[in-house]
Length: 128
Image (cartoon, rainbow, N blue to C red):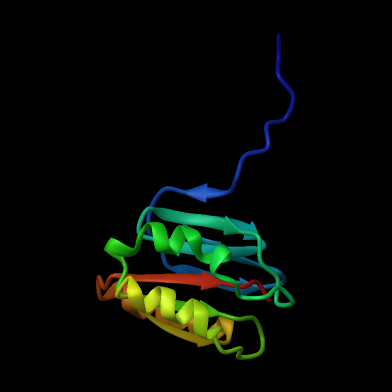
């Protein structure tokens, strides 16, 4: 018997540059994704974040889980720059992850350059 539509968490099992952003989503690896993204060493994941959401440590648990493979975390905070809360910065620092927040466009461009250089980079990108 045929099953109905199966909704799964968005996940691309690889590293890929971001080809485009805007209109509430991103394009990468010949695909498009509506909403925010976490770009990690294990792949690219849909991320339940909006520009209005607080940047809490709980939202960055996947980053912390993969900290052994991440040296730099770029956080694209939407259209406006928002500083990372001190508690989050301290948690990242304790895992030896350098973090930098910037608007999402700058984060995408920086991520693509660092990825092309084979750096241990991750990105948390809030859709614009």
